[in-house]
Image (cartoon, rainbow, N blue to C red):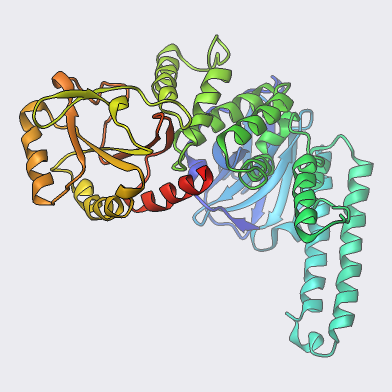
Length: 469
């Protein structure tokens, strides 16, 4: 028995139909006084509402529908505290009953009718509960017994319990290899790593590479059932976020590798294409918009994403086209600018080892907060080949406010500029829709960093200078 972490399951979405045989699940719950019981399903790392049942005259709850459920992990959700009890749905057995006491669900649960998956699943959960209780006594939560045992004896008993659990898991997987229960149990197993030789750093590198190569050994990412369990997305997220160098090229390669393995499972493939697109569309990590562009170019162009309507697809493609010229490593667009005296020049005319391209407004509160950091940064680096190009994004008639602000704050040495000929910076190649906005450009006007805070500039420039030495 456990409590749901959120109410997201109450937001109903359409669960894909698996077959036309229908389902009928009768539930009896002792010590449950509410008149409504909910059926939810796992999808990725969230839960969604599938069905609602009202209390019957015999005090049972009946979930039934002519359309069958897609195999996976489902939950009985009990009001008012949203306590949940997970159970399994397979392809062929969707007419059965569950009876249990709300206060002691696992130990009291009985499965009636044909549901081999749940017989296996709850047998395993009852075994784990028994071993957990034994482990609590061994580790000292039962103080009367733990105080009488030495640490060595405690460890010996814990090792014995661990072996029993491992033997049960191995036996379950061997005896029921095609079952969803076995797939879930196998996916939860901890990977076993060989002993590596070499220096400590070499051993750590080998361990990391081995973990990358064998992370999915115990789970079939193309098994369509696993998408509707709490297991798959957590393993995918760990693989991408923890086992990869957090560089856009590395992450893009890892995503490609993973999606290629998932492709036979249509729903899983589609889910994770959408997941990765959204994940990197909202990423706050500098440079990760390159992963978004990669996703769009490789998975959304040329009719590769039929699940997206035309209007939404157009927005996605336009957004990627807007971002691509501004990716780190690209040469910055050569925009035309005008000085306070009206003379014009281009961004690429600025000669400097590093150019800080700073889009701002005199009436922007965040820009005002950035001014002291930028001023301090420029004082520190102006003699090291760094120039500050401050481009005011106000309309031509309001640019004087920027020049006055620069004089007031003594921003001596900064190259002050506005858009030439009154052209819109928002609609220009840098798409300046909010300020402050900072780009770091090298001597060839290649974008080295972007969208960073003023307080980060010194560290970034110092790092770039160290690498170039």
